[in-house]
Amino acid sequence: MSKVPLSRTGDIVWSRTSKTNSELFTLTYGVLVAQLLRDFEGVEEVNRELRRMGRNIGVRLIDEYLSKVSLASPSTPPCTAFRQTGDSIAKVAFKMFLGITCDITHTTDKKFVLTLTENPLSTFVEVPPSREGLSYAEILNGVIEGALGAVSLRVKSKFMKQIERGDDVTEIVVEMIERIKDGVGEGYKDE
Amino acid sequence: MLHTSGTTQKHPLDRPIGKGKGEVSLSAFCLLYSELVQYHQSRVESIADLEMNLNNSGVDVGIRILELYSHRENGKSPKREIRVLGILQFLATTMWKSLFGKNADSLEKSVEGENEYMIHEKDPITNTFVSVPRDMGAVNVAAYIAGIIRGVLEGANFPCEVTAHFVEEKTVFLVKFKKEVMQREAAFEQAGR
Amino acid sequence: MIYSFYVYRRDGVCLFKTTYHSVDGDVEGDPEAEDEREKLVFGMAFSLKELIGQLSPMDGSTGQQIDCPLGTVKTKSSTMHTYETLTGFRFIVYTDPSINTMQHHLQAIYRIWVDKVVKSPLVKQKGGGYDISDTEFERQAKEYFEKVPGFQR
Image 1 (cartoon, each protein chain N blue to C red):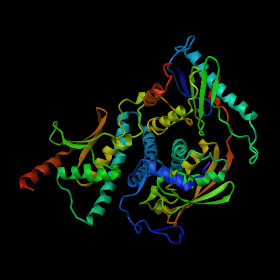
Image 2 (image 1 turned 180 degrees about the horizontal axis):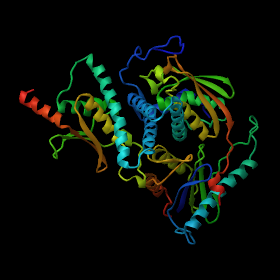
Image 3 (image 1 turned 90 degrees about the horizontal axis):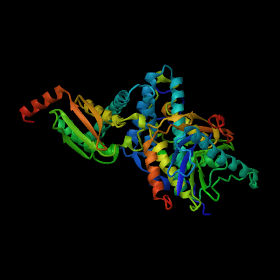
Image 4 (image 1 turned 180 degrees about the vertical axis):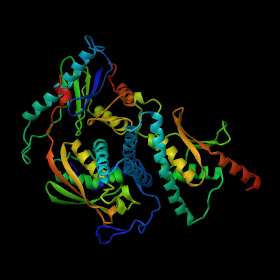
């Protein structure tokens, strides 16, 4: 089995991906955040709503990731170790969806840090002091949690640094909480 | 004012505004857009209201897009479109191309009304992955693009209404300019501009 | 001949089912019996996978059982083909025993599923699954299966 480096897989998938203008993406996200700021009272609620939306996206996005990556690199084995999961996110998933790669540091076997030097969600954004506490790109944390949750990994994802708040880079810490056991749910048992 | 104590922090105004050539995957856009649609959907009673909310969201985007473009174009040929056809052509070619990677399929004057124009688009990006469930009837989620069009036009001082319609499986954006626009247009005609 | 097609999510809730060719003694049109069958199909796929999992060898390096997804279950009268995604969707087709493999077809169906259901903004998510009253997936899946050799017999 020939081993394709992950960054290569990322490039292959990206080259085959239909793409669109990133400004439309950035502005659409901006409209969504602005709408939530109008509809909800506090920034905490907005953060929570963004995270919830992110989880929805993650749950959908992982299916696309799996169906595309198996085509680009049939030899890519499913991630058995959490380390591999992190590397795949940094080198393949970010490339495949946002066109960027990020650096990854494994702090332990169950924890890694993703470092982004740019964030397409927030190209034109600075969080104003009046909205201090708004985690503008919070949706990203939700996406990571949602996507990994769908493959039975419960994780916690949070920002350490955010470009939108004036930091030089965005840092996301992802920590594994547990592997979710497979099992049938209420809908099935209920006979 | 900046908070936090970053070291090499850059104010967004100091970051280059870019040439607008950046790309993300179509899926990323569609998944994000999907959340916007579902968010609005959860807060309205009718399909008409859903389309209206998407339209309003689009307007905010359109206004900003116009600003970005004017900023980029200004360096080259500072020109402000003042005629209806000029601005519509800018929309259906320059802007369309950069946002959607192609020109609009066609731009036509409607035979129905003096103030009506139609922009045809076979596959609007918002509808890429849409399959309409049975209970949703004829909702057209391209209402968002209709909003973007309105935002650009109104930002350029062409007040109007824009709606998205399905016509034989294609989407048609119907632009209806307000009376004052047509009066101004007539005045230009008379002045021979 | 392809008899029927089911999509389940991880916890066993049936998201989609359709019958292409009914066989004698079929329960079509009897909602209660259809529900029962829908549960039996999932139950069989689920329990078999559990059993096989317990019987499969250990992976020396991790000390865990090697994950072995269920593929095909063949009997004299019919064959059940299953494809399970890492996200827990199970795509199951029942065919007559002359069809040997459907795995790559089910993978193709998964891609249709991703495009037409997972990514469609109007398909509502319902407790981690999808609310499928979606005509496009139904149409494209049927179109796809019709091209599979042996669909009609």
